[in-house]
Length: 158
Image 1 (cartoon, one colour):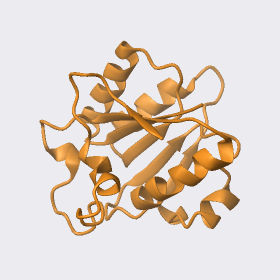
Image 2 (cartoon, helix red, strand yellow):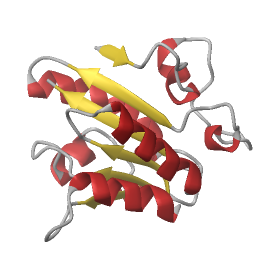
Image 3 (tube, one colour):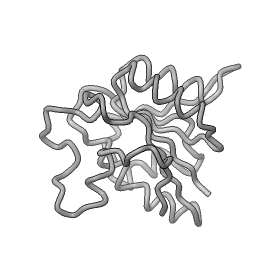
């Protein structure tokens, strides 16, 4: 598993709980959410390489933690891979009552859908599977996330 971020960016607190064992569970009882802090980047990217099943197993605890955030808003998954099914969500232990699975329709693409979901502010985190992701697109996703006071997480599966 490898985390990708540009040299001028810091790692989002969103993943601190997964990187240090002394950190309490992610946002379990916190009144300040990460996107309320102006210094926090609203965009993060996770790159997973290997067999699809192994990548999903590595991704499961992250999505589970995000699905359990104490926030009235959704964890939104934009155009997830076909292997990420309702059965997989259930077996991975995710809180499916707090998850929206969205797929682009018609002329809309996954990027437009992700930006729209972020701007609306009805999701605490919008997870996308966009690859490749040029710097300008990252900036657009971060701006949309800030507008909706949300987090944007892009996952690149290899």
